[in-house]
Image (cartoon, rainbow, N blue to C red; front, side, top):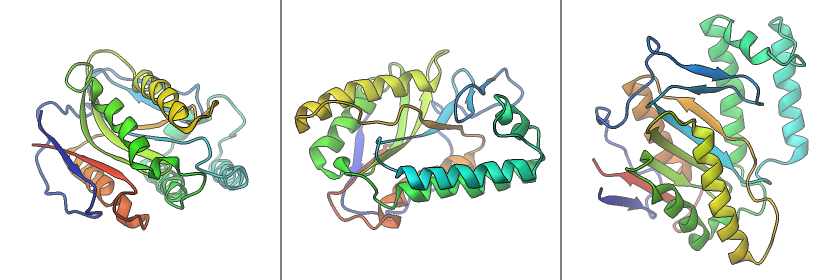
Length: 238
């Protein structure tokens, strides 16, 4: 696979394209699982394509995160869901489509906006550290998964990936984080946590959504006000 990298053109247009054969999208008629045991629900379907976000440990201040959780919990209570129960995510999934869309547009979008505010040390702004992450994502491309477009931002990472075999996306996220934290801490001369433990993953459901996510990834550096050399954008060659 030929690698195409954009590091000096935030907001570079992404041409709409049919989803490549290697990127299988979510099929609601086929078997899938939903794991509600984590802070975020994780959907899993064998061979499907995901939009994944993972972030550094200091990417959102504790006070801001608490405020976000409080507003989220208030929204859930107004819709008859007790956020203190272990199955509140399952109850959320039982709401109407419009209500679920309102929830995710309000809280998922707000969460992503927080990441673009540049909180924390933003160590991934350094090109050599961003490259460590990029190399890790591409290391098993074509063997364990098909890596699509991705962007390494100063304090988080967005990517599109089609996972081969019956392996949940969290397994790959754990592997990427485990490898990169060792390399990054060694480069920085430090120890300890670098990444937040849990990641956000979303099954991509149709070609329009696939294209919209690719555009979001390409435009993310510009929307966050980044300059040349402060991010790493990988665009999969067609």
